[in-house]
Image (cartoon, rainbow, N blue to C red; front, side):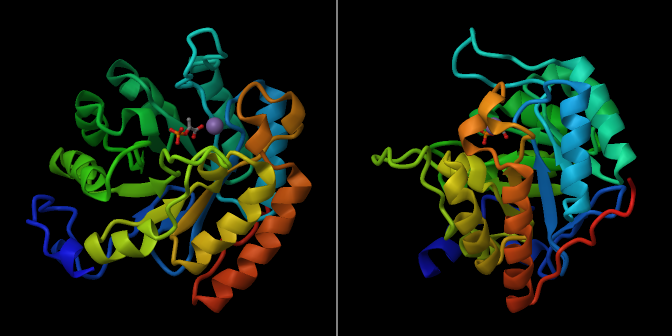
Length: 287
Ligand code: PEP
Ligand code: MN
């Protein structure tokens, strides 16, 4: 830790001692990142239809998730893969979230779409593939919306914090970091989920840190155990892919949980949260 904390303080605004009490990022529905209560972001990889996103919002909200995720603009490795429903999906997300007392987080891929996404979402996600897209960071930083900044797939902690610094220096104090695994020599899992990043970051920065065990492992069966590990390590929240029928998902079905699997995860996460002095969000009473 000494080596890390003695790095030159190039991230002037993100560094821990710039806000020793820590940053708490709050969304309009009361979801909060960085306080005693953790934030639970859940939903499908991609928004596929109004029915799909409504059914998912209803199920995950009833189990205590307070932020609805779902891709409208998808960053796909292949240009021939499903690219997302775009603006139409933003409306579906908003309606589904509002019906169940949830906030919306969704990815923005292009600086030209920041205003459109900000119109519908409560939080802008900057994906792993765009962590160092500096024009996107500047635009998102000026959007006035909280930003969920995912770790680039080969990004060091230092590079990640510098990317966060771009958002902060643009005048946006509401930045949450999301560990989602890094490239590794081992292909037993999709990515290598760096749980140590959570306490490392908590020492280096005042920004909240959440963990995405879905992209972090790529395997539904591994999502629960790694979510619990993340909570135990002090994560300020989770981002989990959940789908009504993972086998027929348009993207990332193999790592998506069924509603039943998500229910089991939430029960266990509540036990771990209590053990480490944290609180799960209250389940939504909206129908
Ligand atoms: C996603 O959240 O669906 C996603 C594309 O994530 P990442 O940028 O971490 O790959
Ligand atoms: Mn995905």
